Length: 549
Image 1 (cartoon, rainbow, N blue to C red):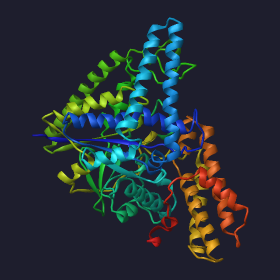
Image 2: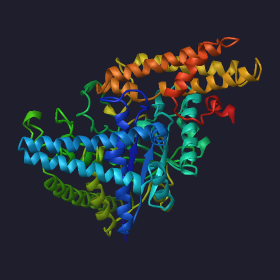
Image 3: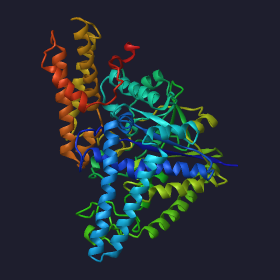
Image 4: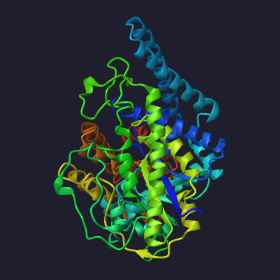
């Protein structure tokens, strides 16, 4: 009989990239994730089902990503992307053959075959509809799908209940539309949490919308110092590291948020470090494919990590078979780790524990190419364990409901465990603009609502303007723009996208304030409706918070 549960949570989010750049920043972020992560993950779920591997796990998609995965324009561009990748691999096969680079030629064949399998799976197995494929797996009970905030806004830093509610309500609606049922659990962006205040409260919105659970980092429950798993992505800033007094709570147990029936699950630190740590996490093994060194002509990665201490130019040629052997060994190690942790917790407390292991899904397949094979073998191994029950988040809470309440600490899973990654000296100007837009939205609701002031034709135009204003406000709030600035992954791109949405929001709201609406705004509105076309069924009343329902 099992003595604990394992809850795997794969969170997926990408910013709105449609018609907003291609390479190195823009639409290809989505296409890479589709080809290297989402489609192979669907195939793994199918494989596990065919092998009758017991248990289920949890997957989350942000609404802005779901929108892009169902957008006809993006799907057409993805078709082109796959054909380009296959043709590029074919060109490398010829090039390396002419240069007698036989090892590299074999790797070029490896990439060609890999993309051909993805193309076949996309067309033949999933009928070019990844959202429906994930929906079908949820309907069969193989996975649970989490909801998310509309554009992955960093909720603790939004100023008003209206903005928080709008992000969560639109996320709820997009989930209903995409999966044909209301969501149970939700992934709060970056696990960001701030205790309720008079002006804003995530708790109130979650309760209003009927969510049953969400996730936080371990220190939000236990106190103490947050773990640091992002040091290889952004500069270390000692001043952002924070710690609180340890508390008599544990991330091995679920809790109810005080004053509600909403459950909260905390990330397990030990399993997180085993995968995420830049120093001794699995992906840093020398046998795995080196993500950062790319062929200057084709862009494919033909080298292995070799060693963290080796310069990028000295990386050795990648060997897929050796890498897969290491992935199997690491999967077995992870299974043993989960078993040991749950056994130790049970021995020390006499209680049934839960290990919650949340990861960005794009880590697997995209950043860590062998990670999806590792994931497959880890789930297979855990399903055979006499000690571990592999379950989705909602199944875990239904079978073993929490009965103790907790006041969560302000937190995130970002560097330092707080809000630094999104709000710092480089980005606080963005929040001033966001808060100004929040106030303008609320003022606009009070002044205009949905009144028809100039006849039916103008009312229709006004409704379209309101809808596009809502889109631009949601996109302005995206946590991606400050994240890209702080991490310096794409600082110029993040700033440019933020300023574009700010300018569009301001020009549209200025037009709405006019009576009559200026005629020259129509062509501009049509242009924006073509570019920023996210959430075609958006309802402006969502920005009215609970007043609109």
